[in-house]
Image (cartoon, rainbow, N blue to C red; front, top):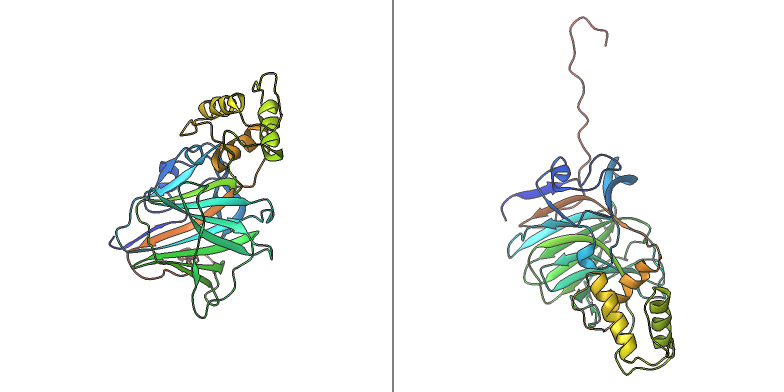
Length: 302
């Protein structure tokens, strides 16, 4: 791409995100599935409200901000308020989609800092850990503003800073470099084993109890810990009702995330601010807005 796309991702506090509202903050962007989104001043960058993206039942049901594919080589900078998530229950945020196949997934490490991996579209697939670059600093902590800088060239490189800092970033690289449209998101899920027809045990019993709590019929067997036809049919009915694809009766991480939400559990959103995308090098911190003095009017006191 030529030039730099910039958008502060700000708007009137309380209003839902929309493509037209975002256009006031800079270059045009597209908002997809705006439910569960709003402009919010709970967390601000340079005093400006940010874009609050809550999680939906699945990634397609979650609000996203779309940036058209920048081309073969590009750099992205965005500010992200990442809440602290439980480190022991597999909680993840699918923060950024890169093309149709991969996403940048963030979580909280045991020391409270940010952990970042690449994840295939299949959330049950193995996460891809990046290589730590020579001279890299430590990851910033969660529950605060993180400046996320991503650069695609021959590989994919990620730098994570605390807000406006310019030194000691955590830098990770991956040899494969996914490409395509970029989508900022706030989808939350848990990395946990996928259950299948024929499985048995306590994990199956927990799944069955959740299905019963949601009102699905498991016949005379109930929560017996045996994943049979009744359990599979109930999972398929749930997937169909909540727009999950595929409807296959396999309760993978995305289906279980939808069940978590359907059960009334609430999860913290992500806040995004000050996006910039270029076809070149690292972009660095967002400059503070200029403060323009009012023009002098002859005859009025200074």
